[in-house]
Image 1: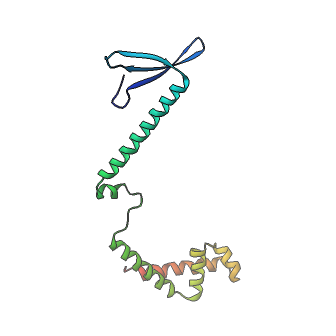
Image 2 (image 1 turned 90 degrees about the vertical axis):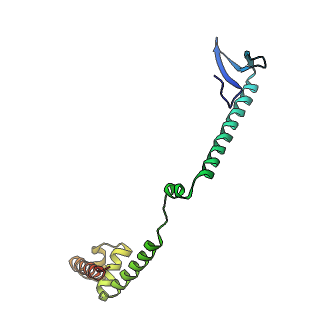
Image 3 (image 1 turned 120 degrees about the horizontal axis):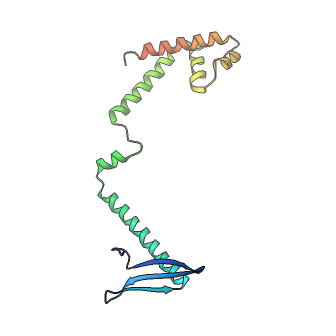
Length: 154
């Protein structure tokens, strides 16, 4: 009935359409007491309980955070940091990719960038360049193949 946190229990009773607000507690002689209180007293005690519970939750969260070790914090991370090796490899791959794109012909490079970086469809690129859609798709396919060949050994 009672726990370590609360010295009293709040109850409401509906009798003949009238709400009664009651507080139960154990007095100094270890006897259970039930008393009726006003709504204002009941609301004040209820707010106090809510604040106590909120403060207890806040304290438990802070204690848990203090107890966490670095490994556990890393495991809970939403976005885990990359290792230095992965960061270096990503930078190297980005540099090699840029070099592979630079080695394309001007037409292939322009069409590849318009398609992949700008997000234009092959039809829109064809309209811009005054050629057929098929020519643009073929040019982009050749560019992709050339880039794959340049990055094959990576």
